[in-house]
Length: 280
Image (tube, rainbow, N blue to C red; front, top):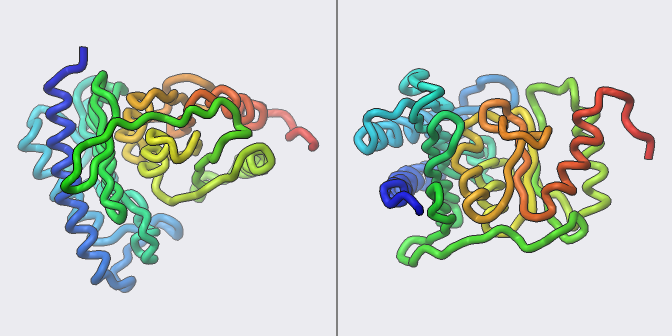
């Protein structure tokens, strides 16, 4: 049976995400690019990320004091206990979009025990859509003032019926040729590929059936901790690029509906084969 405490925690996380999202939305109207900070050339951060994370951490510490934290901006340091309870937080997933005024960014908050997701919330700030899930409690989407609605993954069963989301690698490029081979194959076999710029939103959109699947590698746990539970509770499947369950801390992820095995086969053909790329 679903754990009512987890369902309640999910609801409380949703309220925290909405409050932080309101702050981010307001700052987006005032933001100046002069306030950008660079982790490296393609990895940006701003005072908005840092302040949003502090707000979330302060609220979550009161909600579940015994849990550790794994956070993108490190405002509380690395206090995680990998075998215990941890909050995994991306306060502003899609920072580059936010900085450039592209309205695709989100708040992502996940609660995990070890590598098992227990609760997760992704708040799509610009669309005012709050996606939430708790282990065994289903996946839901709500807008301010409206009741939560149950969401399910797409009924599609083949790549030929599918729209697929991905992200583009910008840190580890030694397997870029293989990633592009996967991309080229999928362009020819799907309805299209989209690159939103927020992994959390990609996963939420798989959960509600807007995308049939999402794949990417070299992600961090905070990019996906909330979203993977959304997909799982919406009836989808989440694996790493080998079909295993090491995605959360290894960084390669494939999430999808019933067509997921067909997409996994494409990935395995190129990604997990160290030989020369097939000629097509």
